[in-house]
Each structure stands twice: as C-alpha cells, then as structure tokens.
Length: 326
Ligand code: ADP
Ligand code: MG
Image (tube, rainbow, N blue to C red; front, top):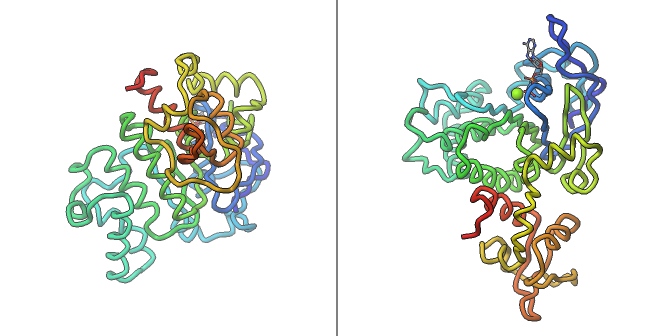
C-alpha cells in the first residue's frame, strides 16, 4: 500500500532528518513509528502526504509514485491527525468535520448523515455536540473530533502524529481503546507516530523503531519484545516501563486480569491449551504474545478468554496507578 524506497530528507541547513528509509506498509495495517524526539518521525509522516518533499528516493502509494498523484487528490485521500490545536477554532464541530467532504463536493444530506454516523462512532451525542465550538470541548473530545474529521471523507490512509500525547493518562487510554475498536471496524491503513512504547505496543500491528533518522527495527510487537535487535531498542523499550520489575514482583495472577474485567466471557472451544487462573501474569503475557487469545481455566472449567490487548491494558492501567491494584 505505502512503500518507502531509499527515502532521505536533508534540510537546506545541511541537517539530515531521515536517511535511506526502506519499508512497506500493508493495506489495513496499523503501523507505528516510534523513536526519541528529533529522530525523524514527523518528517517521515509528512513525506507521505507531500507536506515535506523528499531529497532522495521514492515513496509509492498503491504502486504509483506520490508525485504522480494530483496533490489535492492525494491529500484528500489521506486523513491527517495532529497532536493538538488542529481543529479550526472559529468553526463548529460539524463544520470542522465537513471540510474535506465539502471539498469533494458531497451533497449536504450525505455530509450530514456522515457527521452523525461518525460522532456516534466515538460516543459524542451528535445533537449535543455538532454546533459547539472547539473551545467548548474537553481535550479528549477535541481529539475525538480530530480523529473523525480525518475519517470524514473515508480516506484509505490515515496519518496520526502523536495524536494523544497532550492528553491526561485517562483520556489518553480511553482514546487508545476507542482507536482499537474503531480500527477493527474500519480497517484503514494507519501510520501512527508516538514516542511512547506502551502506546505503540497497545496499538501497533507492526512497530518501526527509529533513531537518528534511520530505521533500527521494524517488527511485530511480539518480535520487538522477544528479539530486540540491539541495545537501543531494548533500552528504549524498557524505559517505557512495560516490564517494570515491580509489576511482576507483585506476583499478579491471571485472575487479577479477570477481576479487572479484562476478558471475553465467551468460551473458546477450539482446543487451545488453557491456562489456570492461578498462574502468574508473566506466564500469561508469554502465552498471549504468541497466541491471539488464551482460554482461562477456573477450577477445571473454562470461564472465558484473555487476549494480548487485555493484558497490555491491565499492565498499563496498573503502571498508571504506580503498580497498585485497587
Ligand atoms: P521527530 O518528529 O521524530 O521529533 P522531526 O521529523 O520533526 O523529528 O525532525 C527530525 C530532524 O529534522 C530534527 O533534527 C529536526 O531538527 C530537523 N528538522 C525538522 N524540520 C526541519 C526544518 N524545517 N528545517 C530544518 N531542520 C528540520
Ligand atoms: Mg514529531
């Protein structure tokens, strides 16, 4: 879907922002770019919708070079979500959402229907919210509108540059969760920039770790966790505190994840090996990293299943509470 071939960017002052990037993003993939500040994430993202010109190399979208597309056509077909203040302050919520559909000359009725549908998809009551100005929304609500505005004209590709990083931890987690649910439904190709490893692991189908303008490792979360390519990836990952030793030294059990209501109540019958609810969180984590979902055995009976997402959610919830389990 999106292919980078030897892509480099240097600025006039001689600084090299990114150097010889090579990777492909599949259709429907949630692709995360992560790395420390200044490593070239935003530059990489902005080259996709031609907000930044390449110095060398080629980017293809659906096998066509990006500079062969009409630039407006290209931008309207790529949703873009920024960290903050991306909504136009003097326009209402519905006017903000309608921008690209109007540019595409959709009729009024279709636009209105679309606005209602999108607002409902992120649990913002259309009647209550559509006539508000951005200043009459909380930070989390503004970012929700930012996300659905990017989806408005149904683009195939969505670029998101640290969209949740200005939010408080609770709203942030809520939006991450919403994003996962939404993506299951819409299956867009998403390129998501963050500097937060917890967020990358929670959201990404694949994670591309960058350093000093280069790609260090581009892999599934499981591969990154189990086989970090070098010390940089390992340290960066550990500084994300996912594996805070305290979390495991508290000896959380599978049942703690279930107490936190992080499981599916249906019982899988596909013969997957179950795990006892008295087993450790660490054992569970190792299982869900390899398998999509693991059946839970309580006193010899399968009572539900736990997925990778559930476990990451549990871990991040507890990290935010400083490792305390309420
Ligand atoms: P990130 O998003 O990972 O923090 P950026 O892509 O914004 O990194 O920046 C990568 C590098 O390019 C940085 O060293 C930054 O200073 C430099 N850079 C970004 N934009 C410009 C610009 N317009 N002119 C000169 N240098 C720039
Ligand atoms: Mg940036």
